[in-house]
Image 1: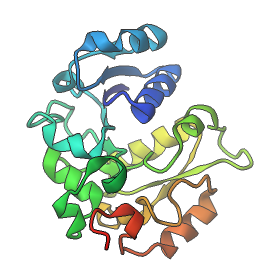
Image 2 (image 1 turned 30 degrees about the vertical axis):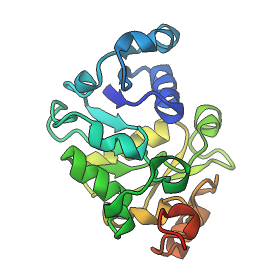
Image 3 (image 1 turned 90 degrees about the vertical axis):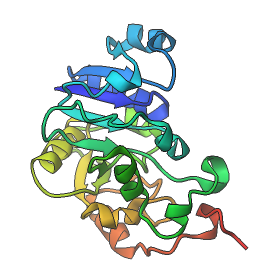
Image 4 (image 1 turned 180 degrees about the horizontal axis):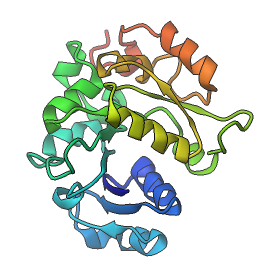
Length: 222
């Protein structure tokens, strides 16, 4: 597949490495010039591009940037992808730790729905709760014991099937986490976030989650 990645931090960079190992063509970008990704380009064989060009003719696009930077993305940033190509977003809202207050999220909008609204495209939420080193090193073949499961929130259809297949290729069990309106079940502060659960425990943790934002993950603490 042709995959465009917007963001080359811990998760974006790790996905660049893993997806190139699997033989996918990857265009990767950050918030600066392509030349700043020369080392990653040389290491992986990915093609470094400007962020506005990452999605061009892509079969899949991944957005992996700090939540506070989403409004800075160019208008129509993912519009040049192939028709129907899914968009993954891996972001988390860290109000106290990095992002400051995002009023719409604090007022109750689901984090991924906010991202989808700003980029003008539906999204699938995945890769947001796994430690980047585990994403890099702990993928296992299908059926292997202790295989880590990754929840995937988003709409049903061909895009979901493609995202599930990609997660499986990377060595993780894909778990349907419902529509994007339910993606709060895997946000920071939930029983699942940051855990390396198997598929059954992942489903249990999704069911245990509650939508209230805890004080550690809100800008509006007393």
